[in-house]
Length: 144
Image (cartoon, rainbow, N blue to C red; front, top):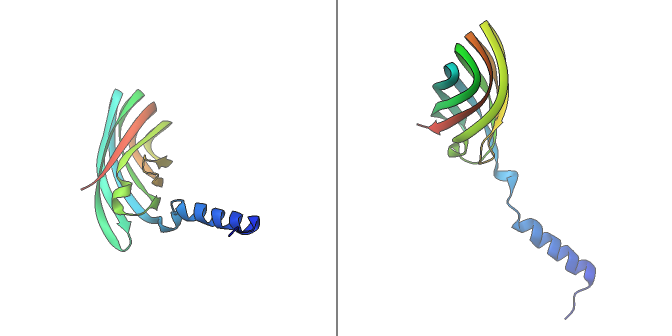
């Protein structure tokens, strides 16, 4: 039995849409990170924080390397949102960025980062210390 072409096209479209991965299961949470950074040409950063996701809190660890014009030391407290995650472990990964900044005493920071799993961090906060940078940096976040 032959199906009319309109019905066949509709069935093929429905099958193709059903086979696509669904983003409807993706969720979001909130993140608080405290990052300490220091360096002279090559810098390092480390710290930790928490992920609040679906009513539970998860401890995070963060660390990274910077290379470029890096001078000084600072403490940055960032708060924000993580989106496009299905489970807490989706936050874990390596986030990369190129940036520039100057903090003398205190200053504001805002950044949007994406990891290899598609998690998107939208963070903002305050940076305190003496830090001048024009660099490439990477931040690795892990669940404790």
